[in-house]
Length: 377
Ligand SMILES: *Cc1c(COP(=O)(O)O)cnc(C)c1O
Image (cartoon, rainbow, N blue to C red):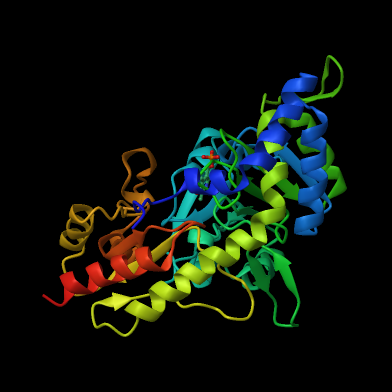
């Protein structure tokens, strides 16, 4: 059996080596390291893929979120509602811009932000909602957009984990996650579903005016050379990373399918066990692209299971072990433990299994058997 890895970047690279190398070589031959034709080509291809009017490439996913918030003109003291159960980058940029993060609990069934809790958290100071499509599963954007419209709020989608996932609407239409809110942000960190070989990110919007503003902000607030109209940042996707992404974007749907196939096999082997809640597999709408495959372990020793797997050479991880409201940096007297029953439970129950495009049946079988062996002993 091949060595099991949490993410198999080497295996994926080996399968596409020639295309990637040729693409990178073009950058080296032309020396257009910054803002080269590869960056523009990638921007266009991603706009087409997502069905969004504007893609603005930038240096990483955290910057993408920050720039999105700057572009919307959010001001110190404005309240921004986001999920308690996510990676810290989401709340970090809110705090950095001196906006006030307002963390709310998530839903048990999809681990995404809870709509009723958003509604309860809205005050006259609320300016935006930041849903995170956690672990690759699209949040309920229809409900979030309706609520935002009712209260005149911006919606900034953190799509770092769910590029390619679909959001389904009750009229039967589907749109790509990240393109439904006023603005979306993603990351091309190597282990993300569309990863480059360094750091990278992008911002999406259908709003022409906002797109123009964002293009200036990523480039020192410059709209005309050496005319700085607004305070900006330096946040660029470099040409070599764009070259890698140009080679990989055409494979993204195939990669999502490979992840969904692995997830289907995990769930088939594990669901129904009394100590396991496995993620459901949606067979129709591709609303989950499995950035992570995350189980809940109930009434059993989750940490013991983790050690058992690690001892057998099976990597696994806890995303995320501590709720954001319990983090020193984001503690706030207004939070009460009883406001976060779901996150507080999830941090004790979740375990993420190896998930990537190169997992084979033998590995999946070994992983699921090892889990059942521990829980049944
Ligand atoms: C990875 C990630 C980010 C940040 O992306 P970087 O490119 O690492 O800055 C933001 N939000 C979520 C939910 C992420 O998973």
